[in-house]
Image 1: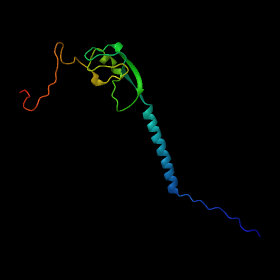
Image 2 (image 1 turned 30 degrees about the vertical axis):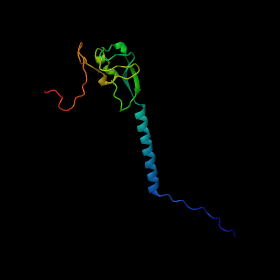
Image 3 (image 1 turned 120 degrees about the vertical axis):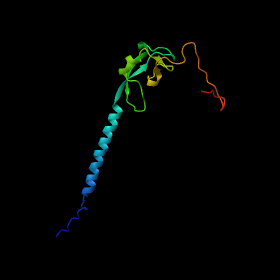
Length: 130
């Protein structure tokens, strides 16, 4: 008579661990898809191609449209608004190779031609009366 052959330990799978593993795999896949979708989104915006000094009128030749990745921290002017920007004035120097932002363009800047603004450091009591 032969001695019985030893059998390896029997593996028992807990249904709770199987379900937990499946949930973790699905969650990881959804997070990966969300990150990929957010990183692959792009938008068309206005870029500066020719320098425009503060106070100068913006011409169509100064602008171009480019497609860039979406970033919620950036607020460039959408390319669809390019016709609204043309003819407005630069509120700050516009440097070639940068994106146009909404606060960089506007109507005529102050002070008007022939006038100037200066800053004064006044202490309390030196302010003019209203």
